[in-house]
Image (cartoon, rainbow, N blue to C red; front, side, top):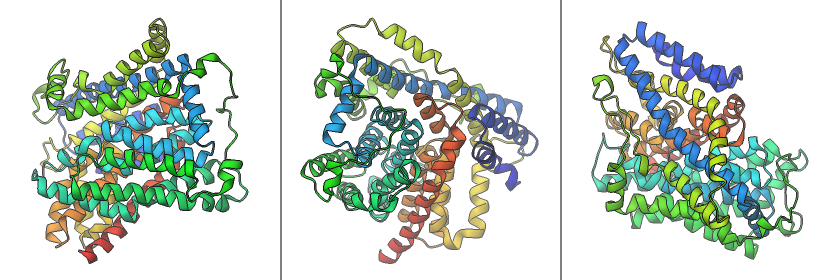
Length: 532
């Protein structure tokens, strides 16, 4: 039965990563196999399977809406020339792609994660990287890998507040777990800027002097990583976990900009001969008058997104209004109390992205004439993505709803977790982050992964007499690292940059960093347990 339960994990890895099938085909095959095995082996009724399929169809709508908003924003900024101006601004700060990777993918992406989540950061940062001259493949991989460390706290602490709700709702324990997350990431997350630069150089840079090219900026990268992790640790200790994913990237972004301007820990070559990769994505310098707009005006739509996301999530009266008005959620699908799908339309990041794109057109172009043709172009480009996303979610929902069976079996994810725990409880702190990563790989959410596995993580920690907050912290970080390999994140980001059908190639590039992150967190957990 364990191989039946593992089908939802093994098949996507084989079909996408091994046979390089596009997601539309690979995930369609995976979904069909999981449905058939669920029916015959897990004794899932046609009603449960039907409800899961309907749930998947509904869940695809808010994700596609976020994708629409991100694409509308991108195409609107291209029309007004704001993307060119943003590009100029980054190059004025530094034309070195190693530094740009950290600024855009890790720090700006981290800020978007802190106020939004839902896979939005990579959809926003990948196009910005392309505008800076990165190849689409490099942009996608760097954006996905970067959206890991910040995702442990997600949008204003959601992975803890919601993800751990089955284990505890005590603020004191949640803050303790949040503190453990930052302590573990002081060992590992601090390395993320250096790892991103290494991925860029090894995967997409020239073959000559690769190690030297990395060592030249390693001190600066370690400084940025240490500042990020230190701000996160201090925030968890002094304030609480809710705003770590906002304060850490924002504070570090300021330090990074100052350090680049003042040339702290950076060799003169970064300024004199900045490291770059020639790609087809690089655009020649332009004298188009549209690029003469001020940098603040060019960034205005993105700044508006951050402000609107932060306001709608922090100001409780506004949050209540948005979540209860035009709520398109579907509760108790086909009568099953545990099968539901949320879509709070006005609260969705997609709505905020679309609104910011519209206001951005008014500010930058003083006209809404481009809106209709731009929106039409975006919708027409999303067909293949919608299909790939739907079949992926069908597989995911059948997998996660498999506890509603006539065979009195635990759900497939719980069956896998219990099977692993039976044989590996003695070294569980090493396994804990991998289980969190596994949950995100399949479900596409650090919050859902934690919601699914937190209770069994807590039970194993208790039975094995392990430090429970450290084990749960490892689960959270592993779930965040799962963003790198989550199939529907890969599908969505690929669509934004025009890499439909390349999902397998992307998965092969991101799986090693994801597994490496989980392994290092397991080792850091062992060390931390000896210190507390």
